[in-house]
Picture 1 (spheres, rainbow, N blue to C red):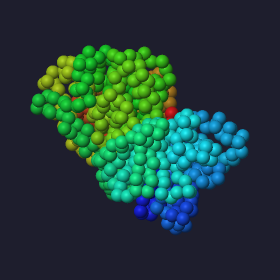
Picture 2 (picture 1 turned 135 degrees about the horizontal axis):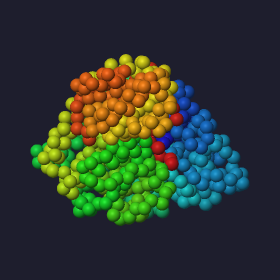
Picture 3 (picture 1 turned 180 degrees about the vertical axis):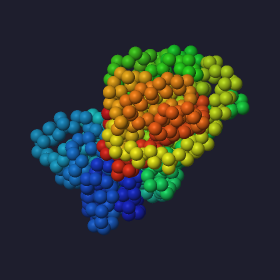
Picture 4 (picture 1 turned 30 degrees about the vertical axis):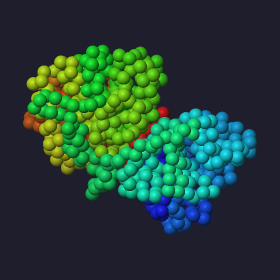
Length: 613
Ligand code: G6P
């Protein structure tokens, strides 16, 4: 969490930084701040609790021209989200300024020692401690700025992506990363440093992804990448594939709605070029590489957090159904602190939109140490997980800006369908004929998503009926169960209505006690293997006067007798159900949240990229 952006070049830094911060706001929006260093070495700091727009208003023309500067948008960890705790932070003498994404775990002991040596702190943050430390190292050791940063970082335990500037030299910026992402944009005589590429793409397509333990030194028109131990690295310049339109709202009121509507295309992008329906073939380089291992694999472990964990649950059904491999799906945050039994025979898949989630990274690290083969399913190209795994598959959903995940989920599920079917083919647990049928079906899914989206206005009407609910229950069985979990998560995260997802039959063991005439119960009741059973569960809800909203298969007349509201989705193979049934639940949450006046793209207390544990 937290977004950082810095600029050094020939343009005015402030507008670039403000725009960049707005693009990074998905990473946190508790406060924002900028530091601008004028050619006359005048360091100006502006910071404000609240959104980047509040900061912009506070600055309101009062900044002097500077072509060097940096900005930060915060997701608070240490200290309340107020003006004082907002970044940038200054060193004791005000010579150095820092912005930081991550957590300095040993900040308390460092702070104590610095206090004993006379340092005074203005904020409660861990970040301020680091910049005091850098200044102290600089003064005590009579070393240069860069050397001081490297020496100070050796004393630090924790995760960071930092940018530091010094009043002494407006032509100098230093960035460093360990555990938190950092991208360097290399323009024509200008440089950008940011948490991801979105603030950069407007100005240059050439970027360097900094690795853990590396620092970047920008000095005038040159830049150098080094390790923290001062070894010079040859930076690899990547060409960005994202375009500007993909990170703007494109006429929609919110990114979330834009991203919901992008799903026909993002699902297609996720399977494009990978399936060869006539031949009954799937090509995925990352999977093909492990053909021999996968043929004999005894177990797959899937790790993830939030929505990605829900995709993992869908993966469990897929791998078991098609590839006949037992699967365990684990919350990354739990897995990493257990003593899990894993060895070199295991195949561990991490699912992550951002590729940066701290717990998922740590879980993978653990699996790697224990000798497992580690595989990533990620959306953000060049992020940390794809760079640490043995192999992987990008989901190709394009940038997802709305904090609540939508198109990234369906793209993850698409990738999992392909992986499960590909392994099944290699193992011989699926016939070519059946594989062809499934791939043919997959090719129809984008059009079916399109058709499902046509229910938007109808769903908006249902949302109006339930916008004042205080609780909601989501039920499903089989593939419908992870969908229920995901539907409930969507509602609670953006509308702040308490919602729970449950396996429909488990309702009897607790949630049924909550049902009354006020309670909306969303049920995935499509005509698949558990249809009759789900109908029985609906009866149990109705007997307690709960209001049933059924997600049902188009053409199902029978459901009319059981549900108060029916949202039809096109008929589909059961394995593809999550790709369709999730769509109306995303729309329902979206409309309820908008009607309640919530900020759907930036729900309170949340951040999209959770880079702290
Ligand atoms: C946060 C986001 C969720 C996301 C989860 C995992 O909670 O708000 O949308 O599902 O992190 O993130 P990842 O990037 O690993 O998929």
